Length: 327
Image: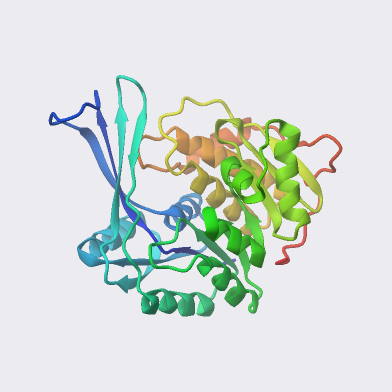
């Protein structure tokens, strides 16, 4: 299966370390690194790292930083197709303060994307030769809130399976169109459905609601260091994350989605793909700054994970893989 990821608001991710974050004075950083980032870019990097599944990244980039981003992506080995825009690709900065262990993230909104530019992107998405299409990350300023929904409708005519990870109005509109796989975090799911989940049962009910309403064939709610909940027509599964010393959570959700898509593209059962996703998220939390997981660490953590646990009163999704229909 061929996977394409789409990133309409990528970022050059710059990370560094400092002893103390203090106002006014000049702070000397160390351990600087630059990575190509953004939801779909990170997903593609993880799939490429795990290997065996063809993946290519479609992205918008421009201005004086667009070429830098293109070269950073090429350095990872991920195949990419750049659609040029006028605005400068954003630079995001992550700073880890060693004295407190806290992480500070500075993330610009991104460049303004003209209507002609996002329409060109939409037309290219409609023509992609993909079996799985991953729409991941925030929309850039100037793009309509239903951009991902338009992309989903364009892909549906070619029987492409769509995986989604975004937030806010973009998430709402995209799920109204219906997807194969959605992976909102708990806060995003609560906001989307207008309800709080204070217990495990309520978390599971949120995931079930996304499936029952026809918004996703597979709905995963990620819970950070607590793991994740997955719902499908076959039932609900829960899997606790392995306990690891968290260095940075940057990209952990993207790694989860990337590993799960990678496993499903290889034909693995949903329950196994779920385990790979949780393992990759935890492995990414072990890496400093904007680094993502490495295959060896993902495999090691995968081996430590038990089979996902069926939720109380729910049938297991660990048997036959549910239909990959687009609702």
